[in-house]
Image 1 (cartoon, rainbow, N blue to C red):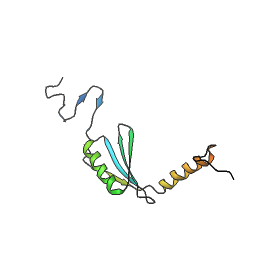
Image 2 (image 1 turned 135 degrees about the vertical axis):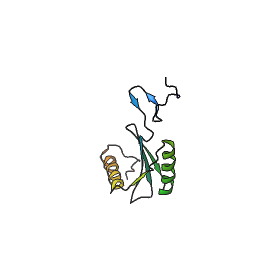
Image 3 (image 1 turned 30 degrees about the vertical axis):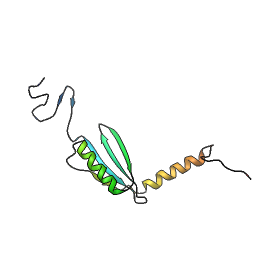
Image 4 (image 1 turned 60 degrees about the vertical axis):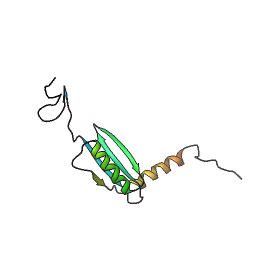
Length: 109
């Protein structure tokens, strides 16, 4: 055990075999052109967490909270994927059409 409470000289916790860096998370806001909804995406230790927000203002507030939580000093980025929402919706529609069961009862006359 180190004399300074488990921290090495660089202010990082000393863990055998692992190095914990304070800025190891990446936070971004995905903003879609066709819809008001936005996603806040947090990538931390190879895992991706996505949070759907109702509008851009709510996404910015959540992104700031995530920056504070993960101690990201550089802030977050804003991404605008081209046609990503339409592609996702189209794939969901194709899956619904190709399934044998309909999502709602069909009345036959």
